[in-house]
Amino acid sequence: MNALKIKWQRLVVDGRTCPRCGSTEEELDKAVYTLKQYLNPLGIEVLLEKEELTFAEFEKDPLKSNQIWLNERPLEDWIGGKSGQSPCCDVCGPSQCRTIEIGEKVLEAVPFDLIVKAGLLAALELIDKGANKSCCEKDASFCCSK
Image (tube, rainbow, N blue to C red):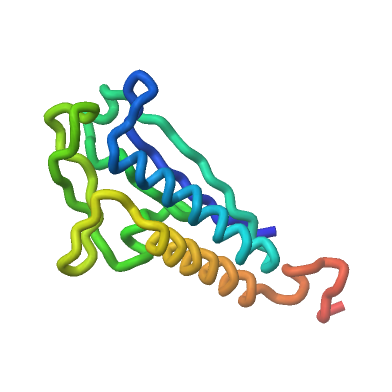
């Protein structure tokens, strides 16, 4: 079974995170559930890893917070966006937090539809890689060259 690996990291201080990370987490959980419904029947397992950043890690690089990776590529790569930053809240202190820019649109939280879109594009890449394997690589018990 192929695996679609989704990793999300965000700042957590005393069990709290910022509002945009909290919103992204809600959207991410819904998106992962939806992706599992569509991709599991195709033989693709959806795996989610949530990583907490300390305030010290966040201070070094605030743009690491609220970052989503799909199969080791940032979400922005999959959807044709780029990362940006803007002021956030008291949890984040004076640092500016990650945003996603798509065209003229700036998003503070990552919405469900963008996560699903990126997930489907990453899954398609997995399917394409599998389609390019010979029959022997797909199933050694059935090999057309035997």
